[in-house]
Image (cartoon, rainbow, N blue to C red; front, side, top):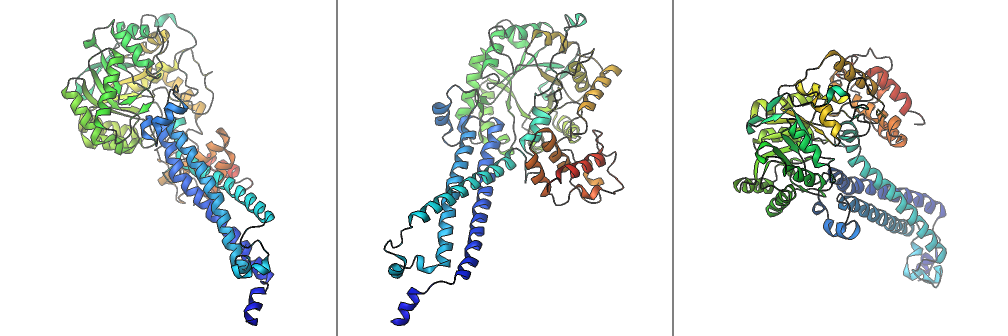
Length: 559
């Protein structure tokens, strides 16, 4: 009995407690932060990634309720962003509570008397209850851990959705700026040159197995809205444009309404009309019921004021699951049988373009493919175009034809001749590309863009494109390229090095850039003193050794 009493009253060795306590604290922090990082990457990151694609509200948990409650008038679905934020908050709260629980366990391990019910006489009358000072400390520690979990989860989310960590760099930041961005694109020449007035379509091409002869310049209706926008469509048709590309989510249905108004003035059978499987809020997700796919097309027909469209796209497709969703294909077959659609297409300009386009070609289901295609595009794309054209006789529509200026402000880049005309002529040079879609949103565009129709690249056009590329060369590392990688004997991931430098210099994400660079298994320190076999291997003309060595000096600062 005496021994038992002595054991209960014994004091734990303070050095042992101190030795075990800090270890428990570090372990608790590691568990919370790593767990938050993984959860943020796997859950919040996927929600954000799919939100950027532009999926309809139905693609997200309680997405339609969220839309009705929080953003009934929003032009895009907010469910993905809300789901990502809710997940981050949950990660933060869970991290805080988990840390307190783990630390109490560590404290109990270090000081058994603190939780031994038989020791209450020794530890005081409060029993197991944490004393107020301890409660405050637990609250502050839990709050700090919660904030740490929030930061870690946010890092994981951005690593997935924006930077493409773990996905070969296929995140939205790189692709969005290099392919999809309108920032800095020179859309309209500063002067409406008299020589362009009255310009007409001068060339038509066969749109693959649809057998339609379409104008080489397609009216992209993405920015059309308002009472007068229809006049642009009518004027373009009068000048020979016979292909119009629209969608429910262009200008939140305003585009389809404008095109529909123009169709009252245009013989329907003389226009090739394309729309998308989507709603005014975004694209329908994989697994959408067949009836819903049919319903959205019927809604488009009502806005367009017609009883059929020639082409319907699986739009902005970034996943083969959505591309080959049995429901969308069954819906298309039903709609085609009913005479409401004629051809099936896919548009893709996303991080998984190569994968999606390859699967579309292999399937044999698609009549038309619309791809991001402009001067200086990555080298793999022409091979995909050749395959689609040669193997499946698919019609190829080039979009994003005005090369984004990525991060630099090139709105001041103007020439005596039109950059847009030079860019369109570059696309028209490829005989396997049926036509080029470009956004018309001013009457000047009818003259400016059609003046390039049927034209061939002249020396002054090539000079415009060369200087345009020169203005962004050195940081335009095209996604999905990799042409330089096999030239490096040290295995330096050149594309990642240059991408991290871009994050640092151009997007002011200095910390993220340095952290990502530090995680590379091989960095550009190997470039110092190297004989530079990579020199000349970049199809875009990047001076690789100079850029990678500069990246190492920049990204290793304070490392």
